[in-house]
Amino acid sequence: MGFGVDLSGRTALVTGASGGLGRHFARVLARAGAEVVVAARREDALQDVCNEIADQGGRARAVPLDVNDHASIEKAIEAAASSGGLDILVNNAGVTVTKSVLDVSEEEWDRVVGTNLKGSFLVAQAAARTMKAQGRGGVIVNIASILGLRVAGHVSPYVASKAGVVHLTKAMALELARYNIRVNALCPGYIETELNQAFFGSEAGQALIRRIPQRRLGQPSDLDGALLLLCSEAGSYITGSTLAVDGGHLVSSL
View 1 (tube, rainbow, N blue to C red):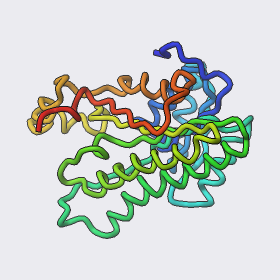
View 2: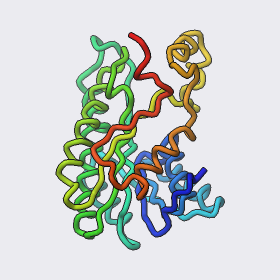
View 3: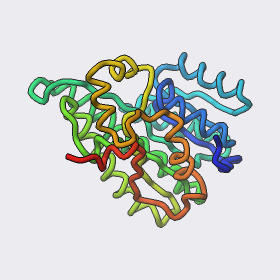
View 4: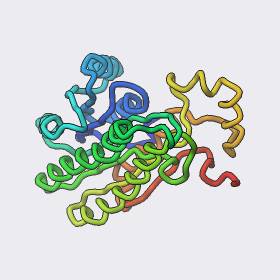
């Protein structure tokens, strides 16, 4: 669904676009008319995304990107802006580790926080510099999580990183509003993907679903309206906001 949003003439960069939600976000923006630049470390998978978008009548290009590498980021932003400028960044790249807080190693902490928080900052900073130089503003959507707003067990580096992304979003929005650059955070709840289907089919997964007020997992398509709102002129007065899409999970009783 396009929700009546027209992003024709806009160029959008989606990080972490080789699979999962990043791949889905790229398809959504392409269907709305944007030229999509998909970025990730897995270049072969990126080409599959581009082919899929082209088959659906959209336009997509692939650029390699390691969000922990300054030179890689600069090259990706330059490539994304090379055909008319950069209008939208969907800052989606992220990783996690599932361990007790007692067992998380320093290396694991650095990898998760470095990718999710530092990486998000570096890409958003580079994109914002380009958007400022272009002089026409732009949009940054940081993909956070409801786990940046409330916590769960065994994912301490992840929840810390996503809480940081939420506050980083607000800080960037405050400073960049004068350049007509809007910065918002999209916070998905539990969304069904190929990676988690087995868990949510288990007894423990079913118990978690029963704690969601809507009593169901979200589907990637449940994020489409929120994404398009934040990326388009429909959300032109929205900046510094945190938009949760979670079936009411955040308001479930303690």
